[in-house]
Image (cartoon, rainbow, N blue to C red; front, side, top):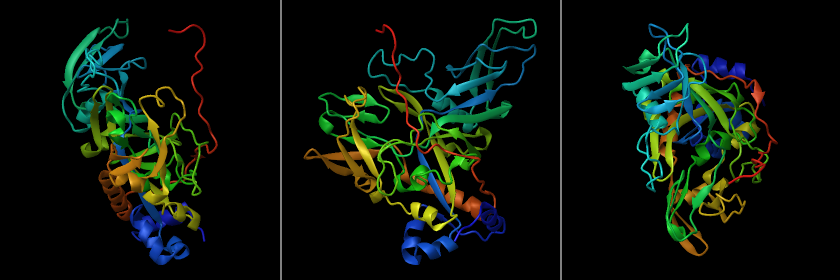
Length: 397
């Protein structure tokens, strides 16, 4: 039994498609059986919400009078990259505010940065825009300072080079001092543990071999209609996998883009990590078409079936030793406590399961209403791709 994208889209357009969330489909298949369920279910919605540092946006400010070829730009004192066309700029989520002391007085607070500017823009808030130029014959203006909001921009396009990590590390600190990381504050002597994944709801954990999610796949990006425009940076699919083909470590990634003017503020949030820096939490939903029973079976993956690797972030992670202390299922991690080396360790998540589930349901509602059609990927993500390390050459300090 197989279906086509065209058949599923026809059912969506006519309001007859059967759509389930990645949570709902588990019990549905248990009750109906795989073959029967594969005939009945058309789409499964997956989602995640959490920190995604490799995010940002392209902005077009429009031309002033007289015109200006911007060479330096700041939004609320956060620098945007201007090494492109005259009034275009790229604002990165982890860019710090100008004059932020960073970790000079360790640990730094990192109260505001690129991720917060993106949050403010999506929320419709006014931000200060400053820009400088050396001036040219055709672009004579040398400086500008004004206030603007997202509606003053010609384009505000979120372009995220690496989102939706397919599984990830669980972080712990084996040293005798507190450390500050992008996975939060880790207390000494393994007194806490953190992770960041929506587990059984996460898109690439429901499509572990990239059978439906690829370049060109439509996505729900913080409420806007977005798409996968490329494999994500650091996409590394040649990793250890469980018997169900699900990776037990960081693997595939997605590069995503969407119109910020259509986004919902609830799912675009600037983050501050004490002692580390700033970031952005993004909500992503991806529909999986049920083309055959095998694809459906993969969407029934449970938290208990997904293993994640525990890494010591005080030594093994920064030194890239490759050592794994233990592996736990997301069912164990979500319980709030695990036992590591004979010690009970409390566990917290930086990713919100509840927000991810809300996204699954919002996307489900859009598909059921006929407002979100599916599309076949124009290119599959690489399945056996490794990741190179940086080879440091010559004398270094």
